[in-house]
Length: 265
Image (cartoon, rainbow, N blue to C red):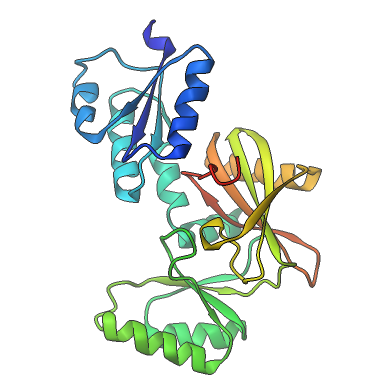
């Protein structure tokens, strides 16, 4: 095997997703192996032959960005790039990028204080959704159904974070979706599969019990994914789309730089 045949998969731990990726890479004739954080020192020092590619699958956002940065500076291509991972790990940055490039996305505002959350919810109207800028699996995402919900959220959070160190958060208009959303896995520039995540709950994360079914990649879906790739660059993404039941419009909810797929593969 030559360096051009070698792929490193940077991991925190080998989950089902990473095992499937390693199996697929090896089946394609590549010398693929996991890269643990301590082994990074040998790679960036040049003590081993540089691989053709490093696939970044670290669970910690901080680790993923740090590993990707160091490999890039050592001249090793990474998937995804550090700048892309940073954007995908921040829902506020994504919202700004989508607005700037005209990508359909729920109206989203930054808030830097409890009073600003209250004012922004009032501006967008009830119900509204408050989200931490970073997070996954639906953790910390709260639907503000009425004024009492807003005060309960502010009171509970302020008791744990009186100094406001966990700000900013994003406040987003609530999208009335038809009981499901869509996850599209993009590799390079190509959307390779789309699944609907179906749930009776307003959140449709598979970690919260949503069921999945494969759906067709339509021209509209392909166009939206193409717009994402145009601004972020080719990568390995999980693009979350949601249909507004009122207007029928398909919106980009967010883009994930470390998509999970074992539960739907």
